Every structure is written in structure tokens, then in C-alpha cells.
Image 1 (cartoon, rainbow, N blue to C red):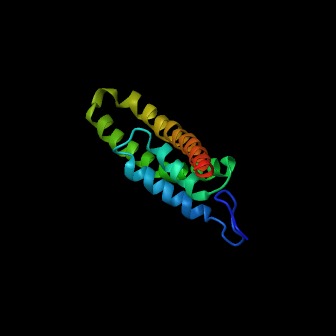
Image 2: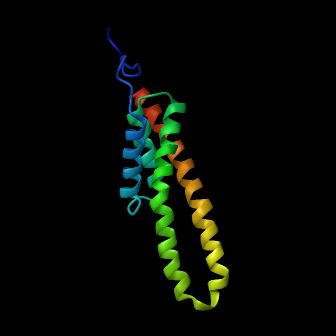
Image 3: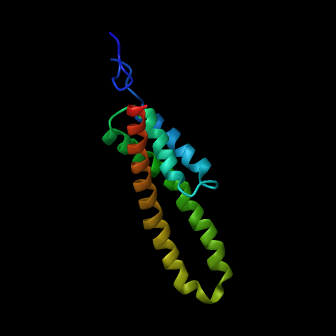
Length: 127
């Protein structure tokens, strides 16, 4: 039985967890270099998943969720130093920093990873 690039061979199912982990590692490693590293990591995960666009978006969002963990910790660490240095504004900036770190950063990584995963799976099916 011959299979085209978009068809899966029976018994050759992709490992979603491994693809999400690889995409997350790509996002984490490229984050200091690329402004949209979550898109790239999600794209890698979606491309490796070899599925349709919905499946690629799902595994890309998984990769973004995994990559969001060190990003949130980084925001807390860097922000903690900045808030500690600005002694007069600590009362105002600490809650803003916590809100940003706990809401905005994970949502960005999830959405960007999902979009990247959809694009990656689309590229896999077209190339």
C-alpha cells in the first residue's frame, strides 16, 4: 500500500506528547532570539504531527502551554528585580506584574502556539 505525504501509514501514528515537547523546546530556545518564538515552536510541533489543521493547532497549543511555564517564571524573576528596584511603586506594580504574568503570557503562548501549529500542519500537507 502506497501512502502519500498527507496519508498516515497504519501503525505510524505521531506521538502528540513528544511533538508538543519538541515544539516547546524550540519555542524556549528561540525565545531570546525571535520575537514570535511561540509561533515557531507551535509550527514545528504542527509540522511534526502530520495531521490536519485542527490537529496541528491542538498540538501547537500544547507546545505553547508547555513553553509558557518558563516564560511565566522568567517574567516573575525579571519583574521581581524591577519591582524591587523601584521602591516607591511596589504597591502598584506588583499586582500588575502578577496579572500580566499569570494571564497575558500564558494566553499569548497558547494562542500563538495554536496558530503556529495550524500553519505548520498546513505546510506539511502542502509541501
